[in-house]
Each structure stands twice: as structure tokens, then as C-alpha cells.
Image 1 (tube, rainbow, N blue to C red):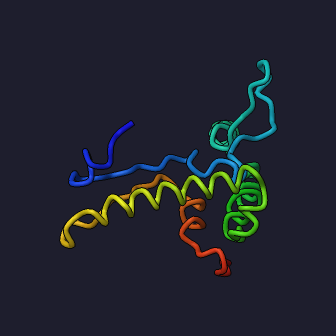
Image 2: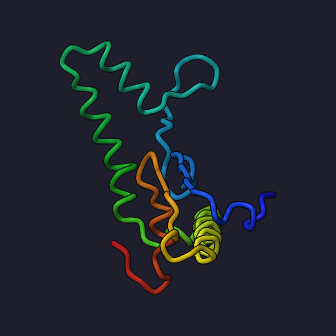
Length: 140
């Protein structure tokens, strides 16, 4: 384990990957089997397959409509209450809050001119956003 005392005065950068909010939203893994064992297509793999096979790309439109309705729209509508209503979601929110509390403790030990930490993300991290939401706030 790394001691906060060893790193509190260092530049701190964190990179959140797409799995950081696992459990809050559906993944891009589809139920469509590849035909080899239990392997299933991801949305990206199936989109690539459709692009290569279809000149008119009609199946792509339907695939991206599915993506919007099953992934994007639920993320837009997710509230803190809904996220925390499942065991997995509550754990994810708790982990984000623990992380943020720890980071705030670290930067609070610094001089006022050096109180910052960089958070980078690959995608919208809905868990991070919800973890920053006060429990009594309404999030739409």
C-alpha cells in the first residue's frame, strides 16, 4: 500500500477506463453469438462486420439505434437513487466516493497554490458524476 505521506506533494494523475463504472450501465457486449463457442460480439465488432459486409449500411442504423436506446439513453436518465438501488451500483458509488474523499484528503495537505489533481477518462464516467452528486440532489 502506498502511504499518502509519500505522494501528497507529487503530481497526481488518474486515468479512468471504461470499466470504472461497471454495474451502473449496460456494457457494449451483445447477446449475438459469433458461432465459435460462447464468444459474443461487442457492438464495435458487429458494427465493423456490418460495415465490411453491407454497401448500404442499413443494419448499422438499427445497431446504432439499439446502442442509443440501451446504452446512451439510460446513462442520460440515470439518477443517484437508481444507481444506488442495486448492490453493484451502491458498491460502485461507494468506491468512487472513497476514491474522491482520499484524493481530497491528499490535496488538502498541499499548499494553496498546488492543490490539484488531474482526472482523465476515456468515456463519460457516470459513476464519477453520480458520486459527486449530493444524496439529496435531483440529477436528470
